[in-house]
Amino acid sequence: MNKVESGLSILGFGCMRLPVTKDGNIDENQATDMLRYAIDHGVNYVDTAYPYHNGESEPFVGRALQGEYRKRVNLATKLPSWLIKSRADMDCYLDEQLKRLQTDHIDFYLVHGLMKPFWENLSTLGVTDFLDSAIADGRIKYAGFSFHDELALFKEIVDAYDWTFCQIQYNFMDEQHQAGTEGLRYAADHGLGIVIMEPLRGGMLTRDIPSINNIWKKAPVRRSLPEWALRWVWNHPEVTVVLSGMSSFEQVKQNVGYAKSGLPNSLSQEELSLFKEVEVEYNKRIKIPCTGCRYCMPCPSNVSIPECFEMYNQGCMFEAPDAASLQYDFALSGFLTGSPGFASQCQECGECEEKCPQGIPIREYLKKVAAYFGK
Ligand SMILES: NC(=O)c1ccc[n+]([C@@H]2O[C@H](COP(=O)([O-])OP(=O)(O)OC[C@H]3O[C@@H](n4cnc5c(N)ncnc54)[C@H](OP(=O)(O)O)[C@@H]3O)[C@@H](O)[C@H]2O)c1
Image 1 (cartoon, rainbow, N blue to C red):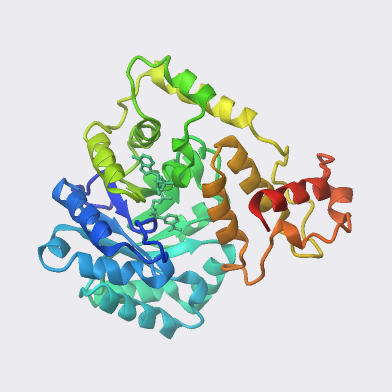
Image 2: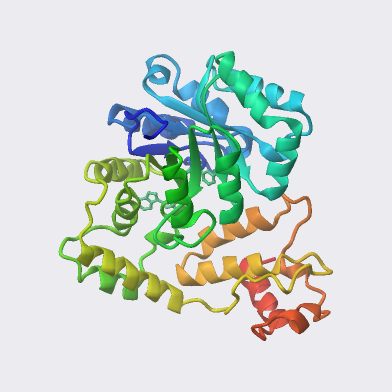
């Protein structure tokens, strides 16, 4: 039995990609209208986090939900794992978040973006004790975690505490990535509610590519690319809520509409086989045959070689250089690890090429990556 009470909407509002003004700030009027429209049309799960929009997402959500709206939603936010240096920090951040969100409790509180070093640090500092006490004193209702690492660690974390729910990246191109399908089933078997992030791979699965469109033309019904991708996630009975980071009013209206028919086990075998064709077609567009084995690492110049190749391949696969560039800037900036890993840092020592089992001319490809992303 699922530990999350039913009654959550299958579409959740992700507040990481809100519309912004020319100066990069949240377009508060438009974003408020979008959020309230979604709530007025049945969305009752709102997800934000401490760092989104340079720290402005939580205060925005607090203002936008004032009055009746707060009572109509389940509010989710996250402990910023990478900032925690002591057990006391955990209480400080949660208390600050309650103020930012203008609320006396968080319904769904997650330990944010768990990766091995954060999990080890937080476990040592007593994060489970913190969660127990925050539940006991009513500051949070349910405890969960969001995850960005390998499957084995995912299972270890699921087993380590009585979580109510977890949040994983999942879409039809990520079945084998991070927690993936095996992690989804593992968490569901352990009774966790499952919230999905990046169902459209941050928007990459929505780009018009003629060879992909030709596959979807064979389907018995016409659907847009985002509708196909969202429907694929909703097709899984293990999934509780699918978060979408909608960045325009049109997208909110569309996704609220798609959610009406996004039922588990509602796709036919014929439709599911088209997803496999689409996956093969995307994979044909991979430019660098890197398997992510990491034999090339560590790099003396600190270049995150596998990640550079992954972001470049994604930009090419999905014809989404803009979305790939955002991820490249974020993932390789050193925001989480403390040291940047951009392709342009390569000093061409060639140590990596001696170790690469695929014989990839890494130095040449890193130049292409640096030119593609501008750094
Ligand atoms: N906990 C974590 O570590 C973590 C990490 C990532 C995300 N999240 C949460 O999960 C939420 C969802 O992830 P995500 O924002 O990456 O979701 P996503 O749905 O994969 O990507 C959102 C993007 O998809 C595009 N899109 C959405 N609806 C569309 C439509 N109807 N038509 C065309 N394009 C559409 C938009 O891209 P364009 O703007 O380019 O059109 C939008 O910005 C986030 O907002 C955040 O709340 C959490």
